[in-house]
Amino acid sequence: MQDLLERASRIRLVIFDVDGVLTDGSLYLGDDGQEYKAFNSRDGHGMAMLRDSGVTLAVITGRRSEVVRIRMQSLGIEHVHQGCKDKLPTFLALAEQLGVEPPACAYMGDDLMDLPVMRQVGFAATVADAHPLVREHAHWCAPSPGGRGAARDLCELILRAQGKLAALVDAYLDAPVDLR
Image (tube, rainbow, N blue to C red; front, side, top):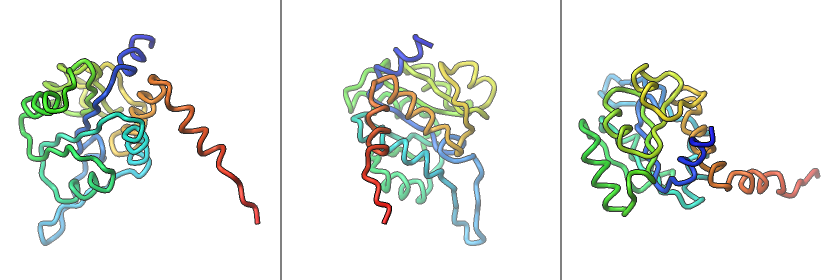
């Protein structure tokens, strides 16, 4: 566990896959061809807390979806890369652009196409319901499945390792109570 916390304490950039990580992997298609996805609001809050703590967030996903752009924009995530069938070149270019070395990067994926990036980063994370080979290559597996709190689990682990989680939680507990 100490090695895990040391890895997490060095993270400056966290990259998430979308389908199977920020969603449960289901694809809902309307008769008009429109694609719909369900995102977990607690995952979003965890991502916002991590972003506000100074960690840069990004998304690299193999599919293209307008709803992903809209959701990431609502979370203030500027680095959104969609349609990446081979995610490794996108990861390497993003890390270079941001001046972050791979050991200071975390990536959360759930399926085989995520392995090339997971094998390059300092903190490879996955979801509880990930492909078995992905779980085998991850440094850490979230207790929650994709789209059901796994991203929040990762965000809180990193915040805890960096000594920032307690102050964030205390801010909610210290808020004035109005019992009118």
